[in-house]
Image (cartoon, rainbow, N blue to C red):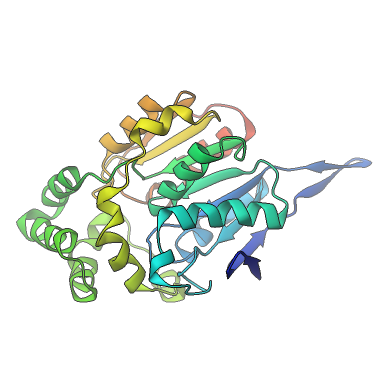
Length: 284
């Protein structure tokens, strides 16, 4: 469905009921609002991996403004301030009362901003493979470790001078290094890609935003998830998040890359499910 939020219509999908039968009563389940990565991708990058969690919570998937099947908007509105406001507005329109917010990669940047500026909104926060400040130096080191000098050079070229052509080369050489398993071709085919949004973000704001000094204002319990072999937001980025957020726990998934829920689904979804339900699930 498409939901009017401010000046745009945002594409949203909902999976699972919010209320379930519990004997003679209806019991409310947690709601998880999932924010996809990119920018320039859509909710397909998460949806097919997270379906199993519908046994635990109602899942609400969003295509961010300018991405997927949401309205394109305009480049001057492709920024974190606007994407953060969109999430707040969407929660208001849908009547999402203190949802759990899960943000992956770029979506984790948006999720951090929501939790910092609107600490009363999320009941819990899940930050997966993301960073409070993009660390070009750490990413280049990891790309070289995983893909050699060519991968480092291609990544550096895109970070320094982003363009659609440079992004195509990055996707060809560097994207296969993102994980220990490759995305299902059918899932990749479903993604509505808008590369111009990613190029716009990498040309400026990816290098200027910095939430590090504000992380201590996040008041909700937070699960920080990291893949041991993540090249674009290396483990050190997640370690910093966990160290600076007061109620954070860090889970590092072994032999996993930027999408641990795809590389190690049983372990990753188990940790998320346990966190959502209030327990602990240490990863081995």
